Picture 1 (tube, rainbow, N blue to C red):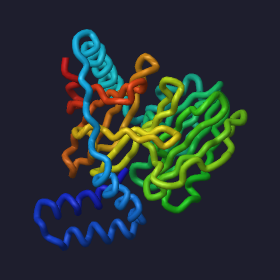
Picture 2: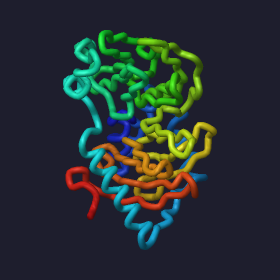
Picture 3: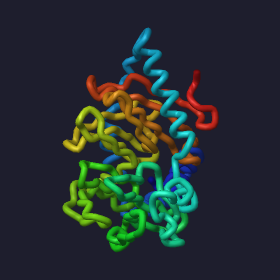
Amino acid sequence: MENESIANWITIFKKTKNPFYLIKAILLIVRQRKIDEVAFGIYCELFFKPSKVFVRNGAEREECMNMARTAADLYKERPFFSRDQLIEYFGDKFKVSALPPGFTGCRTESIVQINNVLIVGDYGTTDASATVAIISKDTCTINNFYNQLPGVLHIHSIHLFNESELLISTGDTKKLTDLWIVEGNDIKFKKRIKRYLAGYTGAIKVNNQHFFGSDFSGRPNFIETLEGERYFFPSKAYRMYVQAFYAFSDRYIASINVDLGCLGDQTTLSIFDTVHKQFILCEYYRRADGFPK
């Protein structure tokens, strides 16, 4: 996700029209090496407009609303696990208590259980941390591969690719997606799948296909396949990054999108039909209230 300072300067510039704040934003973009990301955002703005919402009627509409309510309830329950919460939820089956004291916690999109191993990726909220922990009942192995890569600040998502492999996506300046092999109580890097603009904050398998959600604050966002097909969000969610994905009926993806506080601090819930490749719902809602009945 975008560093708030960049978004803040841009927001202030839009309000005041003072070029001083625009210059500060540009300097920060250069310092954080996000020129390609910003240029890509401008390109998307010019050539890829928000998707239309193909509203269902009757029984299909009610089914759509039920999916939205369920997804909102799931998101309301737990979007992030602190270290203590990981111990509380998983400590009876895995040696989560052996996580380093500096392990901040992880997004729900960065928790994967494969065989008898729990794999979690750190999302440092105060200090940069991209630790990946592989936890069994009796062991806790720490992989610091991403902490050695300049520009990688934390783990955005860990996605179960198949019964023995994972896809790991990183942020913030260096947005990568890599393929890893699970070997017993450890993981081994296999190859880089995507090396640019691939810091996916959502990842899910639906209808025998893998889908990923982009993480661009204040710029166009989309659902993308591993093959590179992109489906841009409808206007309400267009400039909000993906926070979480939920699957329904092995066909639909419910996507929670959010923006930064300085950009409005809003939340949307969209539903994407993977068969017809179209959005069938996109609405604002407040997490505290859940989705409208």
